[in-house]
Image 1 (cartoon, rainbow, N blue to C red):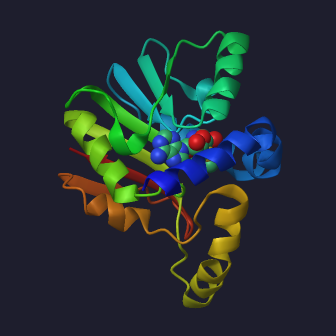
Image 2: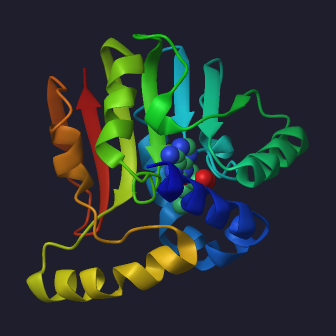
Length: 205
Ligand SMILES: C[S@@+](CC[C@H](N)C(=O)[O-])C[C@H]1O[C@@H](n2cnc3c(N)ncnc32)[C@H](O)[C@@H]1O
């Protein structure tokens, strides 16, 4: 796990200054609307955002909430910190691995993340950490790209996955819905507006 984590972290450290530029077209066309839908579902006072990246979700943070955010890439966090100052965003940023969170059990009302579990080396380990730090009755909200259910497309995605990981540190062949279901939540559902590849996943502890 250590060497995988170190390699992925290094990739994000390297692309951090260009990350928003690389995603600009997809962001404008698709991601922005999905972020709105994701954050509209947040409830409770204390929110944890995992894999905060450069802070692309800052604009959607609910007013009046206490937000804690983590990422394991120092350089991505540095970008988030600049954005925090620029936008005067109220968020506590921490350098931390989602696979071993240093928060106490049952700490947060909502735990949320966008496009994170494609790159976490041991995704089920990370998802179990989300379960652990979420309060009983609290929720996990995830926006993730997953492997297509179309057999032909899934084959292509699996074939080119090693190249995508090598370039960007992200896997395009994960089954994150199945992974969430393996973590003991009382309920797991996928928002009906989700497509074949982009999924908005809601789980209750
Ligand atoms: C594709 S970026 C998405 C960033 C942001 N959530 C967004 O929507 O733009 C994935 C982020 O997850 C972070 N990440 C990946 N694995 C992680 C881990 N094990 N612990 C903490 N952060 C992680 C990366 O450093 C990166 O910032």
